[in-house]
Image (cartoon, rainbow, N blue to C red; front, side, top):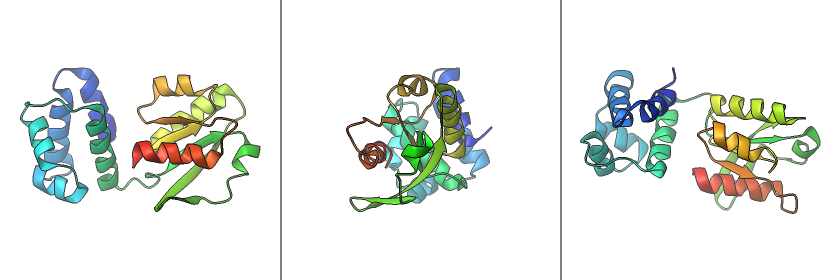
Length: 173
């Protein structure tokens, strides 16, 4: 089981399960102290200490930040990208695989889908590959949001795919 999956299982398993999973991951898997983890990831030391000492339950934003930090430490080979799930003609309109939005460079990985089923399977594969967010059509987004733990941004037909990628990036970076 990946470290991020361990954290997610901890959240679901029991009250304080996230804390217990994070403690195990830091001590046994990453062999890091809280200070080392925070200095390497940029997370707030006081926030992590409060979570570890049971004085605070993490909010969703903090959970996402911790999971992203662990992904970076694990150095997932395909992590740190935004997945775009769409039919091939839409994907062909994306000319760049690294898109510059504002001052950020965003890696985009394509997942072609020709049916709802293909889109759902592609979404699960993208999350397993380490995607930070998904960009997809509105018809499949509600289903994908129910089964994934990463943000889902919707492509609105009147808007550009680049705007949807930008929204996904805003939620993840």
